[in-house]
Image: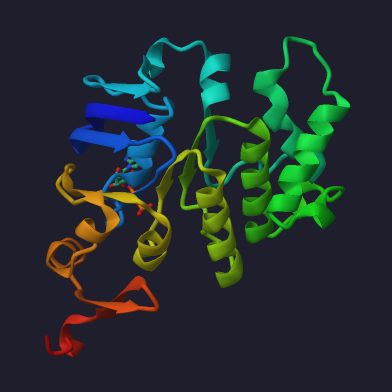
Length: 258
Ligand SMILES: Nc1ncnc2c1ncn2[C@@H]1O[C@H](COP(=O)(O)OP(=O)(O)OP(=O)(O)O)[C@@H](O)[C@H]1O
């Protein structure tokens, strides 16, 4: 469970987040959505402690994140962000094994059990065949899957992901988000694709341009065209198909009749 209240952030004079709260319950997948520049990545960084809000606080299972020793924080929070390790000389297998770091004491070497955990994680993201390749030589989508495998290897109790479907083809977009769901751990995920959010998130936080939360709550409540249209500035229709909610988008000059 991750909760946060009253978070704010400025880049210079620009107020990006103002009094933002987040409530990610145990075993639930919380999506952070909103237009470009609304502060999703900044909020995620506040939630995993890369940035420290001048006010408010973030708690992980009730403990203040700012007070957790780094190793303990890393056992609780696994983070998958964009553009990680592009210049590294590590192989994929070595990269994934780094996820065991928070579980090893200083100078302790990885054990066969650690290798098994890493191999299993690579298998879960469909990347076993990449194990011996240099990480830096992978495509964007392959890298993304390997970084998710590293997060799984970390066996943290919470997972935070920034646009994990970026670079992934349509099959892996669904497979990775289904995997996140199946893990059953508390996850917070920045997503642009509202239809992926509809399918895989239990709850959503919708950020607007003004630095605040426009709507928050169960996914079906937040993905309301009346709520979304003014925020994204595009016509939106909502349909139900095969038991799933889908959104259809219409630029202003093609607005479908209600
Ligand atoms: N290091 C920085 N220095 C100055 N401004 C920044 C910095 N990082 C982000 N910003 C600005 O803060 C605002 C929020 O950025 P952020 O990346 O959090 O938004 P986002 O919702 O994740 O955007 P996107 O959907 O485009 O990825 C943007 O206006 C961005 O230009």
